[in-house]
Image (cartoon, rainbow, N blue to C red; front, side):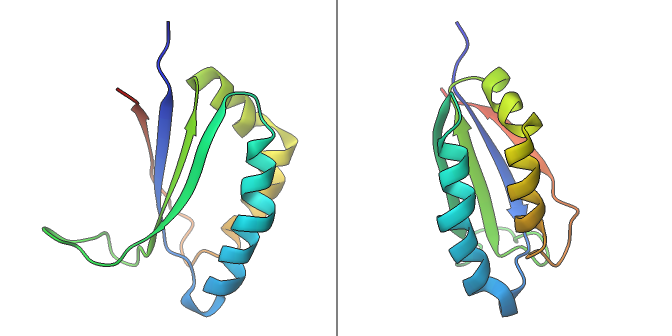
Length: 106
């Protein structure tokens, strides 16, 4: 039996477009993802401070999405809906070099 997964990506959202990006995330991106089989949760976390160490340069948000399986998340990623909503979200970023990390939820 596979475990649920969570993917994290550190984002550099353009501060001048932050309100617009957050509105898009809440009204378009999250509702679209919620319609996919296996969806568990999706959060956009705003960085407040690095408590120890240092944050990656320019990063001001962390994107976190959870699915019941990696296979179902991959279906979401391959969908036309994801291509559309991610493409629009990507337009709010100051850099498009985003590293995504896949975690198994324990």
